[in-house]
Image (cartoon, rainbow, N blue to C red; front, side, top):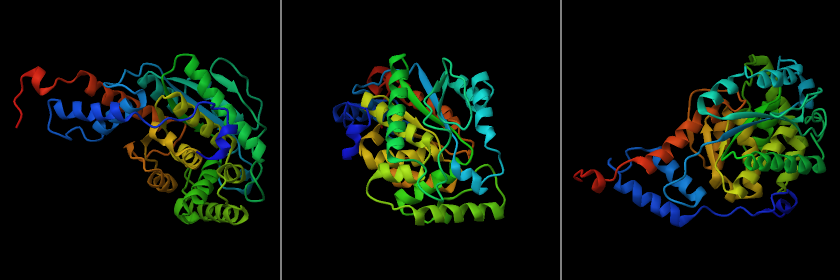
Length: 353
């Protein structure tokens, strides 16, 4: 565990997954009425669930929650996206009204949606499902200097842990990550480049669908940010230099979920870049994470390779919001159900080969 984790408010250390429960899960998988390995990744997911919950078969996941961490970015002023910054605040109102894609997909998955204002550059009214955790109105321009101070990054991480603990205390048993922030793919690409060593051109995608000249400009901005940033072995310093307030909140959210021993479903590029910070702070936390999907953004593919996580869905999604995590949740719950409910060869009286 990185020494800075003691400052992040999780208090409880992240325990390794329970090997006994996973061994029992593998043994039970071998007894179910199917050829060995026939359910593919569902089998692996069911074993992971048992390790997370420390029991076999795993308990049903009945109250998933999506937390959409929202913030604005100073790098927006560099012209890395054609979308105005005001869209971030407008989308929060869309989430509040239940009209965004993540709301639709969360309803299908039986998940509640919460929005967390980590640093939106506008006034956002808080309510039961829109949580005020604002650090300030957007980060600084990461191409000119650090996006945030180290103290701000630590504060944002701690607020993310607070959100996770609040949702778990309310009875939610699975945490799904979401995000909203115009220009956040630029910050995410910078984080992926910094933590994986990949070239900016290889990790910087088209985000909201920018044209070739703007894409080339965006790559150049990420390159400038990497050259400016003193990338060190301190993940908090790197996060502060290149990330957004929503990235920092997601780091705390994932760490707290893992420390509490609940499954965490990661969304796309923004969550993947935040997970790279988590990996550098506390690698054991990744054991509690499922990669909900593989984004069409090239940086996400590189992040997943570095994290060692296999995506459950690959549909060329690049919307964010938590849409990929919401789509993947029923697959994870289905994996647990197969282990709980399928008959064994002996109980069903089915002959083995």
